[in-house]
Image 1: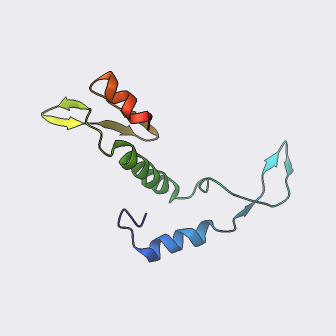
Image 2: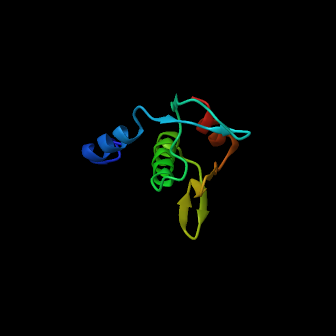
Length: 103
């Protein structure tokens, strides 16, 4: 997030929010013991969609770095389409598609 220009105090605040999380789950009406959450975002948290979008942006920037493919739409070259939690990358040629996923 620092590479994307987010201020350090905001990154620190988010880290503190997620550090040392504990939760319980209910299975068949029985509540589990407390356990540490190691991955994911908080279900129902208003920040979760934003954190997902930030992560997706970071992944797409790295994936498309140096990518030359794409589609011309309305005079503008687009390399990907993103909607909610679905992403599509558009290579111009088969060789470009391979270059997206093979490093």
